[in-house]
Image (cartoon, rainbow, N blue to C red; front, side):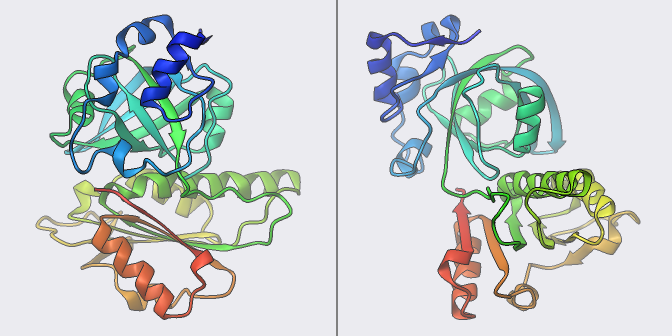
Length: 309
């Protein structure tokens, strides 16, 4: 059950969550979220430092781990229950991830759709194994019923309103950069289902996903992606790229696989006045494609990108 943080503790949480004026945490989470557990990080690539100027929600909400599975040899998928009704997000956004007893705040993109939260109060994250303390905790210590706290932030999202003009989407992902783009893909599919079933709501255009990873075992959410492609073949298509494949590619995946990196020529083919481009991956990749699109005269307001280190 969520509780409102009293004034004294609200000031404390404000030190770790800039401008948080109305935060919600379970009492047990509050006892463990000490100042050292959320502020003690001097890494140059620290999530809080990198995103200090990015817009965030003012609510910190308790969450409980209710599912965990290996999405790939190096990525663990978490499902979290968030009872707080004030917790919401837009497809593509991330969370500040507060772990009791861990001295660094994590930053992880949500890979589930907003509708899953609306219907089941669940969100999903997929976290790559690294030596960063939040990732280490998720891979080595996190268990079912572990309690954490989260706050939503980010300016990289797709949140069309029913009367907005129809847009095509081109989603370009590298590695775990698929996470926010899968959220956007799932949200677009939900919008299309709603319009097909009810005859109203936002009309999505076509969606094309370009997704690159080292090999097919590191292509995350393959089944989820292909299920959507097969459910909506007139709307959704994908091109899956592998750069260091050493094993045979399965018959199921082969029609969708290209060996080698995503090329600018593939992307340029999909440029139109009605198309929005969302790019998420390592900084060199996001820089390359955003610059390529600008040089191809795509308006800056049609290019969205998120860099993950």
